[in-house]
Amino acid sequence: MDRALFAAASGMAAQQRNLDTIADNLANAGVIGFKGSVASFAQLVLPGGGGQGTVALGSHVLFGQGKLARTAGPFDLAIDGPGFFEVVDAHGRRAYTRDGQFSRAADGTLRNALDYRLAGVRIPAGALSASVDENGTVRAVFPAGSRAIGRIALAQFPSPDHLRAIDGAIFAATPAAGKVETAGAGSPDGPKIRFGMLEESNVTIVDAMMQILTAQRAYEANAKGVQAADEMLRIANNLQRG
Amino acid sequence: MDGIGWAASAMVAARTRLEIATENLANVSTDAFRRVEARSFLTARGVAIERTSRGGGALHHTGRDLDFAIVGDGSFKVRDAGGHISETRAGAFVRESDGTLRDLRGRAVLGLHGSLRVPAGASIDAREFALPPGSRVQNGFLEGPAVDAISEMVDVLAAERSFESAQKAVAAIDAIRGKSAEAARVK
Image (cartoon, rainbow over the protein chains, first blue to last red):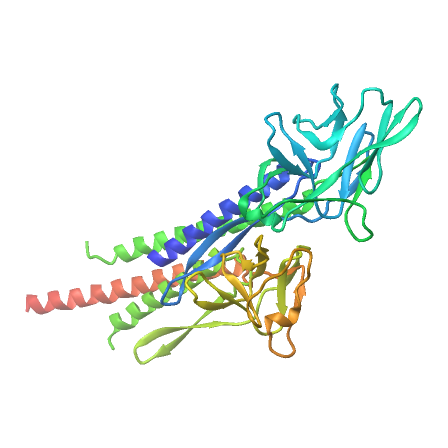
């Protein structure tokens, strides 16, 4: 029964991890640019063969494209294809995100709600408005006409699976993710930048709800396994003549 | 074999059935896990359990470019840090920054010529996996677990009850023997 008890307990722990991941996805389902994660498990096999329950392998982010939605924000950007916007925080640290909700700050930089600024772009003081085309070129409109003032580059990683999520839709580079490469958008089969659009999270609420229900039931089933193993130990102990 | 022996073997068999059912239940979210089926049969030494396993889980769509499911027989070959090569059908892989492909346990995925290296942006040639003829890989899919939580729960309960009955039988036989021993002493 010890083996059964251990296997069932490992199953409960696994479903707990699974629930944590799904709950995090669900909580961020409305966050622009958020990428859902999935927890993975493997059977724990003893050296001599034979299973010993399950073990969590951690979770990995699913970088699939979210739906693009037209928006009314002053400087909303979305990436259609792979890649990240490179943003810089107040301490100069670089981070990567697909959340393109920027607005023009007093100093001309484009900043998001968490006060990260978009790297490489500064709108001159005299500009009336600005727009971005598919390949990332930023054009500012002046009273005298419009001209290009910079280009938004997209960051790519050799191993995006190793990026570290720091806050909702924002990721930090890690040594394992490899050397970041920034490149312009807009090549025929490469990523494109969409101005006036945002990328919704790639989490579907209905799917996440279904996953939660399944994980909850699996948790309960494993709890029943623990109970049954415990009950059988009790029955076995009753064999002793009183 | 005497009555207690038979009943005790039934208790052991029920314990084995519980172990198998909880093992299956624990892996209800494990990709490519195949449930173990417990079949009990009677031998000259009591009840014995045979473990069989068949049939993989259904493929589910993930849309991830490094997820692979095998349609048909065969498996992916992976090598751990100690050089030990094993086989798996769980095809969720991660590309390292140098292009090396690893599975989620950190084992290097092997192709035709040693560990597979895939440059960023390149796709993987399915022939590298050296699957048997007739099998193919489906990219963007994973093989789910072949376990049904409800039927395993039923097995857990059945094992518990069968264990209880066998224990009752052992206790009853034990009580009868106790009585006979007592009667013998009285004479």
